[in-house]
Length: 234
Image 1 (cartoon, rainbow, N blue to C red):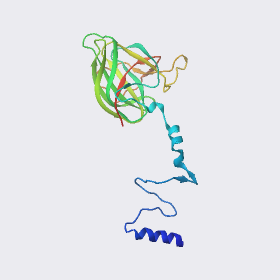
Image 2: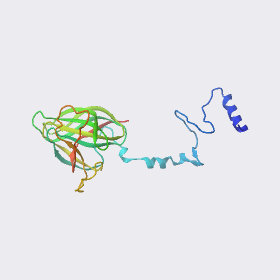
Image 3: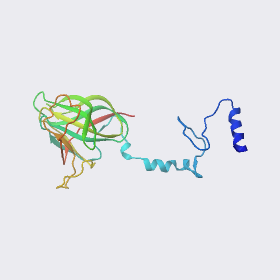
Image 4: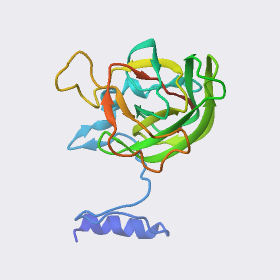
């Protein structure tokens, strides 16, 4: 041990409370480490480049308004309608760009179904660009009148890909969207529009299954819009 190093060790011991420090050969420290002054790596002050780092990491899709409704991003077109087939579940990709909590799931009924008909809303996890395990069965909303209808939830989601779903026991029409993400790619024989989501016939409008089910068909060019309201950014 050099004289300089010995002096440093003596100073640390004289403080009274031992200080955690790494050996000269390196090692691992746990917990939070706070630095004061400039932080340098190989003589370069990296603290001076904080603004550059922030600019490179900034994603405009992480800017989300609390208490606003959001859906699959980016949106290419909206304003059309989609006719739901009875007992056929529709799955729409939902990209969560940051941790957040939703307090509503909603659809807009544009043509009413028969009296007493309902739609069930929910969220599934993703596995390899396909809906997999159930995250949330949000319950049912009436679709027998033209209205914006909502299911009240309290669901936290971490950053990643999910699937918003809707299934009805009737045949209402709902507001449709065409999103701009290319998760499912294009049909092999038609590049006019990329695929928007999945449908699976015969699912029924009862309680959502623990797993989405196999054999769903990918389709486009628009899809029934399911919207989530942001309660908080977590």
